[in-house]
Length: 405
Image 1 (cartoon, rainbow, N blue to C red):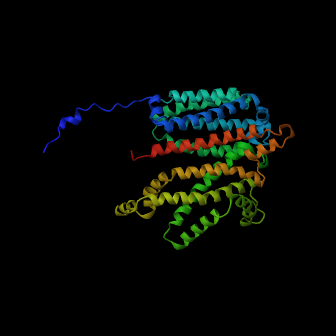
Image 2 (image 1 turned 135 degrees about the vertical axis):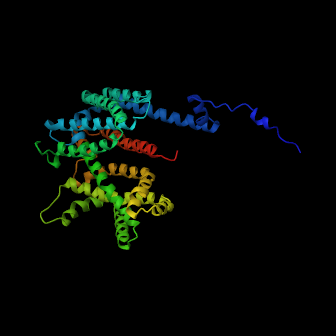
Image 3 (image 1 turned 180 degrees about the horizontal axis):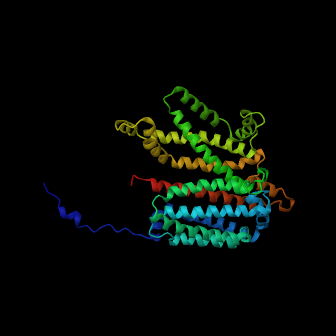
C-alpha cells in the first residue's frame, strides 16, 4: 500500500486568477462560441437601437414642446408668479438629499470617487446639452452643487455627531410639512387651490403621502392577519382580500364618492386628499402581504428565545420580530412603493392633472399635435429617475442592514 506524498499538493503552483475588464469579458461574455455569438448579436442590436435613438433625439425630434411647457409639466396650472415656491422646495430637497448622502457615506474613505465625479459631470452636461433642460440649467446646476456640497458637510457632521441620522429623518418629515405649506400657501403665504396643483409636484405629493399612510396601515393589517384573536384576524383578512380583488381605478372612483359618506354631513374633503386616501388604502392591502411574508420568514425560535428572557408579546414583536421581518421584506416593500408611485398616473381619471395627465393635455394642444414620442420619452425619463432612486436606496439600505456577512 502506497501513501501519497504530503508535499505533492503543496508543491503545485497556485492558480493564476486574471483581473481587469478584459479578463471579466472573457469569462462572462466570451467564455465559449455560443456566448460569444450571443454577445455580438445583443451588442449589435443594442448599438443599432442606441444609434437610431441618438440620431432621432439630436436631429429629428422637435424638443420645443418640452421647454415651452416646462411649467405645466412641473406644477400644472400653478400660478407662474409663485414658481419660486417650487424652486425653494427643490432646494430644500437637494439640501436634505446631500446631507443624507454624506451621513450614509461617512465611513467611506472617499466620498467623491471617480465614478461619482463622472456621474455628477454627466448630469451637469446633460442639463446643459439636453434641449428640454437647457432653459432651466441656470437653476438646475446650482441644485447639483448644493447636493455635492451638502454631501461633504453631511459626512463631516456625521463623523462628529454619531446620532445625526435620526435628526435627518426628522428633518425629512418637517420638509414634507414645509412642502404642503409652500405649495398650498397659508400662514402668511397666498393660498393656492388644489385645483391648480398638477404635474410633477402633484405626483410627488400624492406618492409621498400615500407611502406615509399605507406603510403603518399595511403593518397593522399584517399583524392583524397573524393575530391570535379570531375577530381581528378575520377583519384584517377580509379587508386585504376585498381590496386586492378590486382594481385601483374602481377604488379611486369609490374613494371620490364614498369617503364623504363616512364623514359628518356637509364635510367634504378635498379631492386630492380623497385620492391620496384611496391610494393609501389600496396599497396597504398589498403591503400587508409583503410584511406578512417577512413575519413568516422569522424563525419561531426567535420568539421562544425572547419569551425565555421574560419579554412580553409587544416587546418581542417590537424589538425582535419586526426588525428582522422588515429587513427581509425590504425588496418587496420598496417594490410596492414604486408601484404606488407609478399608480399616481391613474389620478387623471378622477380629474387630477398629475404628470401624465399634463402630458395628455399638452398633446391635445393643436400646436404640438404628433409630438407623442418627445413628450412620453421625457415623462418616462422622469418616472425612471425616481423609481431607480428608490430602488438604489433600497439596495443601499439592504447592504447597511446586512448583518449576515
